[in-house]
Length: 412
Image (cartoon, rainbow, N blue to C red; front, side, top):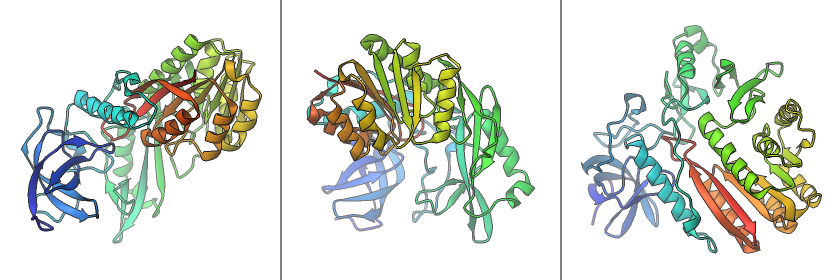
């Protein structure tokens, strides 16, 4: 029987959503970062739970054919109880494998998730869509200042949000963002201007270049312009927009293709942001389009984006999507309407799920950045009579554990 703090070995069975590998020792399940399926690894137990333990990678005895040497900018050695800690950077994932294999791992995770949904058939999962860029794709990063033993540290939060990992470059960020970041961290006046707990956002668009702001942007700042397959989209600083512009276009095209095939008379876009999916529907000739979002600035921008395209029947409403869903869906023909949902990572709230089920809306396009909460919502919708017709993984977030999905449901 192994003892705590012993170093022992096992074969990695699979990688779970979140990026941790699973292995077993004497029937006990272990979760460990930095490994790939099929690898024979040495690990040391970190924390024991009732049904499983977490472990830290010590050595890869038999590496996968897909293992690669991580780029130097990904490497970070955390505090460790073992003599030779594994380089591991919080927030990053799969940087030790080729990108094609990363996409394959995520697709396997996604199919397994859908397969667990009672009433859903995993065969409807379409082939995955990889990001055109696996590095330097992010158009925004958010960094934090943290006072640590009298020293002001500036960078990404480490696990637990208690400590900051200092950095002067993010391998996932646009090169112009990294250029700006390097200038900031090398400027002593900037570092001295930071306060404990302060956040700093650095943003890039092709039209505007780089801008940054502390905590919240100035209300008087000019809006940004994002170039998309729909043309320029105006986005107020601080408002949500997809962080991977190329994959944003993929999502727009996927929604557009479904709209073009179904040809609805109405589209309701919940959690619409600055309106990209509603605008995609209007572009495809949908006569009546409504978007709802709680962020008033985003709604102002969405209405501007529609007006600039002369979409007179494309309207946007500011308000809690959970509260407005019921009344909005009552005013459309459920047989001739497509409901587009793009909620935050925690998915649909209970009130919105109830309103959708009560509405009888025949068709739903569900865009999700949280596949775990997507599964919960799919279970609920399928119980009401919806059928999952297709679902596709889009790797919006390469070299992290996350991915986006687009699902299409109908009531037969």
